Amino acid sequence: MKLTCLWMLAISSALLAWAAVGLAQEAGGDARIPSTNAPGHQYPQIEADLRATFRISAPNARQVLLDLSGRHAMAKDDNGVWTITTEPLVPGFHYYSFIVDGVALADPDSESYFGMSRMVSGIEVPSPGDDFYDAKNVPHGEVRIRSYVTESTHEQRKVLVYTPPDYDQNTTARYPVLYLQHGYGEDRRAWWRQGRVNFILDNLLAAGKAKPMIVVMEDGGIATGLGGGRGSLPATAPAANRLAFAQAFDGIMITKLIPMIDATYRTVADRNHRAMAGTSLGGWQTLQITLNHLDTFAYIGGFSPGLPQDIDRITSDPVGFNQKVKVLFLGTGTVERDSNPNIRNLHETLTKAGVKHVYYESPGTAHEWLTWRRDLYQFVPLLFQD
Image 1 (spheres, rainbow, N blue to C red):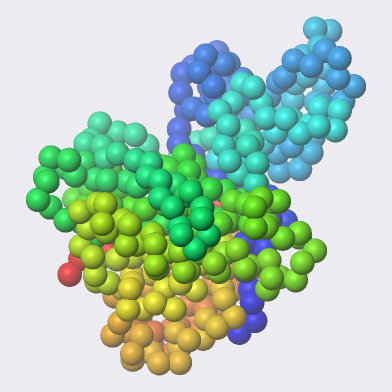
Image 2 (image 1 turned 180 degrees about the horizontal axis):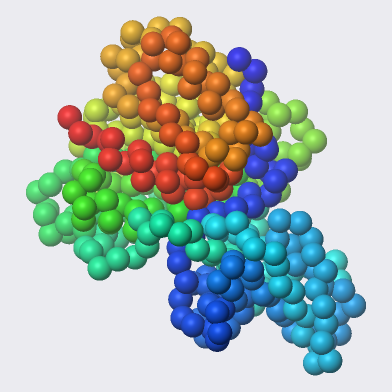
């Protein structure tokens, strides 16, 4: 099977639509203030029909554009304030920025997020009926920051670790571990800030739909690998070479990250209590690493994953694969499926070969966080059930 990395498609589409978290306070009339606004800032605002109004003060600017699913000219008033009201936005989390006289700038009225290989602004657009990733009045786990050093590369690395609500109280308990990777142009914070993983886990645990678990979020080299950071290669380099940074995470994860997590946290340190999942390029990493180390992982999740060339290793021995892997999960959005059916095609191939797996389509979503939050919500209850 040819290399079919959906993360490349994501680069060209700039990772546009993302999942909704909800809205904060009233803004006046039908407009409301997104929860992604900086504290006390009234713009952007979202109307009831999901049109959004953005503004920025730039009295001396000659031209200001809104970069949100394309570039859109803004209008300047007599006070030097530039404004635009969009067409109704697709529900989800959208990255955006302003381009002021050719310079891309984050919106000072918005919180900032690391996406598209840089710090950008974000806006949450409500998704009716989706509240499984909201902060609710339930027991909450913690997201902790842990530093460690890799001797092979002499790097000081950081990892985010979610621990379940009872972790510090139930000090004799040991927990299974999910290693969760983000996509291209993001970093270890993405599943926490954009993905809302902690609230998804909190809500599933409170509802009795999932087993308590630890979730580990590492960068995997993706954030800087194609963006000019240390160890990166130019975009003109051959694809195989440009994937080297992502492939290098295999050795770090197996020889350093997993042993460090098992030594630091109260884990159940065996393959039957270890899972890995990832989005987009992180999904490509997940498939590569887990297929290379089926003695280490029993659960595999690909959320809009890029598909490695040797993905047919799964179908080469379906009986053996079914015996080793407790859950193989593949997720995609119906919108991205229609433009790139690779994951659906893999699902059909696995079905014909007799490979047990779970296939999920997120209705009405593309290569975006609403797809991946829904994927995680479907995947986590399947983990560590026996």
